[in-house]
Every structure is written in structure tokens, then in C-alpha cells.
Image (cartoon, rainbow, N blue to C red; front, side, top):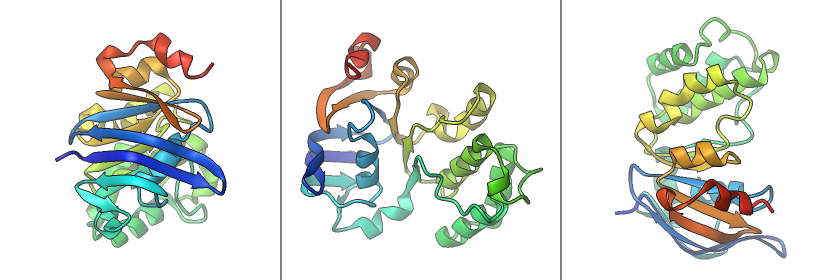
Length: 225
């Protein structure tokens, strides 16, 4: 059974079509990398898969469940790393992760382990608003994987991370995590290296959908022209 299956997905904002005619099938354990210029519909696609937006047309199945009809059965099995970190700025890193741990019924020991893995155990008592953007992104990564989700939805996950921090979170959200992933990216070379499948969007419409091995960096660059 595919982890993600879309047939003619469409989503609008008022009269503007943000997504239209998106169809694909992603198997469990595979990674789909989505390319396209700003406004192409990449973040909208992730929000639909995360059950935060309802599709206006087409069929959407995530982890075998139809959306939006069974969104309740999907939410606890998906981890979302969005542009906004989905954290409380006046709480500390530890308080944020403990709050989400309680929501998901996760043992607090998992929080402490993640703080160690993202190397924030020494700064975990400081309000998030006092931390750098890179540190906040590392907390957001920890939040996204806190409940061991089956599907990771990653919106430019290495934004605000320097090379050392990017390497630090790779075991959690990279290929080594061995999870099904849908990733948005503006980096053709890195994105192709992470992908099993590539989806290219232009103005909300699929312009490219192939196995990663059949796609070149030059073809991805064409999406941005």
C-alpha cells in the first residue's frame, strides 16, 4: 500500500489555484523531493498531506487513510517541519518538547535524548526567543520527530542551518532516519541525492514527475526560469 497516493489533487485560495492536477504514488520508505519556485504550491502540498488544509478536488490518501475523512487517524503518524517552527517562543526548548510529548503520549526521556542529539542540552532552559534561528530550527527538528512519525513532511528542512548543524540533524530527518519523506527543496544537487522520486511544480501544476535517477540538475533548473 502506498504511503502517499494522490489523484488529481486540487487546492485553491479563493479564486487562485494553488495546486491542480497533482497525481502520484509514493511507497513506504521512499523519499519524494518537490522542487519549484516560490509560490509554486510546495508548502501547500505539505499542508494538505499534514491534514492542515482540505483538498478542494481529487483524492488524497496518506498512510492508507483518505483525507480529509480520516484525518484524525493520520495526524499522530505524521511529523511536519514547516517554515514556521510551530513552537512557543516564550517557552524553553525543553518546555516546548515536553508540551508536545504530552500531546503524543511520549515519555519525557525521549525529550532529553533529543535535546542531546541536537546538542541543545546546555541551552534548553532559555526561552526560545533568545536562541538563534539555527538553534530554533534544531528544536523544530526535534519536535517533528519526537513521536517517531511514519511520514516526515519537511519544508526546506535545512533552512537556517550551517553545515555542521545540518550534519547534526541528518540522522533524524535524513535518509538514515529510514522514514517515508516528502521534502521541499531549492537545492537541485542535494535534493536529487536525497530523492527516490522528483516532483517539479510550476504555478501549482506538475511540470515534472519521475524517478530521481531519470532527472538531471539542468531539468530542475528549468522550473525556475
